Amino acid sequence: MNHQVFFVTGAASGIGAHLVRALLERGARVCAADINAEAMAPLRALADEARLMIAALDVRDPAQWTARVDEVRACWQRLDVMLNVAGVIRPGYIHAFAPEDVHLQLDVNTKGVIFGTQAAARAMRAQGGGHIVNIASLAGVAPIPGLALYSASKFAVRGFSLAAAFELREHGIKVTVVCPDAVQTPMLDVQVDREEAALTFSGAEQPLTTADVVDAILQRALTRAPMEILLPRSRGLTAKLGNAFPALSAGLLRALRRKGAVRQRARQLQGP
Image (cartoon, rainbow, N blue to C red; front, top):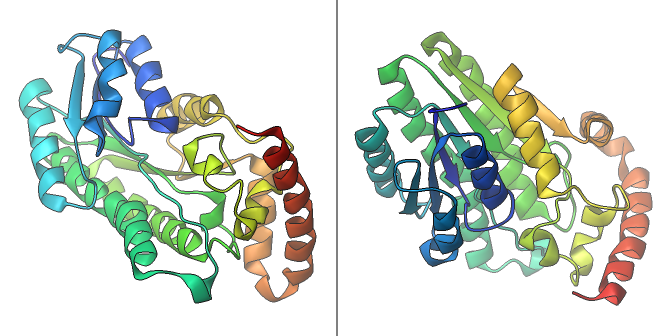
């Protein structure tokens, strides 16, 4: 991993921030990108400009994507790994969606990943190879009532990533989509007080940590380059089964919602 060049979106917090730190510890050169450039200021203490580039990036803007990737290549002559981590969530029932909820989640979660994959693919084709890792969700493996928009955006990320993996392999470019269950990040905190999000809390008693996801990326995605990683695997296989037989999964969803609501309430009582 020494001297490899990585591009990480969503680097201001959560999985993205943890990933930047882990990569720098391993000697990598990293472009840390986020729409909130000021929030990435603490990362500057981790490495000098020879190994760390802080970049403001709105993943919804393809022109910004082209400019940032060009800057990385001008600085380090290549781009080895693109990690599309940035994402947003706004729980809500279908009848209550505001137009801005639709636009935000599809623009950031789906279009942002598509634009990032596209920008990386262009650079990697020119250099003869590379690896693209896109973060989806188990909500992109099985539909999640109450999170229909988020689920739709992540289904799209997963489908796009798998198609891209087949398309880009002939150019020496690997694509991996990582689908984690609930992860303890600010995106999970947003859901604690929203009854629509009860299913989010129906998995393990403790959610995944950012370290769990980062370890899966470093130890599995970047070493073995599978097309898909489900976290945890058991919950992922359950999600695939439910998606394969959606008409038969209504009872399971009701039971999981009840279980999730109990755990959600417990988290509310714990407070921040």
